[in-house]
Length: 257
Image (tube, rainbow, N blue to C red; front, top):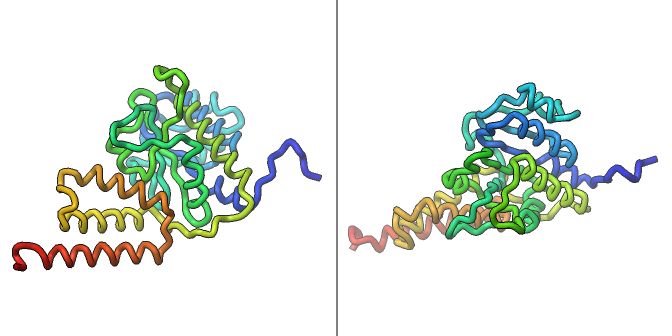
């Protein structure tokens, strides 16, 4: 007989939790790493990655983990963001700062995208360190950016508190999932990155925007493409569009006239 106090997850919900990883970039305080592990366990998440920063087996981290020490023992250490998000079809950065020209989602607004990518892909949530958060460069590398709203504009959340908010939203989404979505997103971050670069190069060659605009335009393309959860056939069509656009731009260039 099942315990009514224990949430019951569908296979789709279980898949979402298993596909979710939490990435901490250069965390300063071991206490936050331990509290992050505790928050994750409470919400059914088990994949913790640390980009440099404090060691997960620090005594103060274990002290704050409280029956979540296994997450610290199994935490993966990496030296770069690219390594930490490798294989993820959806990478979501977090920030407390409103950046001009950067569209920010609330955690709840990001959940439909998370659901779409959960069936056949992986989702990486990236958190910056306690002092500076994620750099603009790291945020531009993410497909989407989330900001947790606060009533007081001068307030800010502790790192582990921010992880708890996101982990709770992911758990809630997992509990509400009855079936896997029918869409099949790209199998990994590399495929999406290749498509972004191909489209960006074609648009640059066609004169749609100047080379100095490239980083920001690439970030916008990355956000748009991740939002529609492309499957392999759809991605192939867009690669064809980029190839045709490049060919047309070459035919119309001054050297060809």
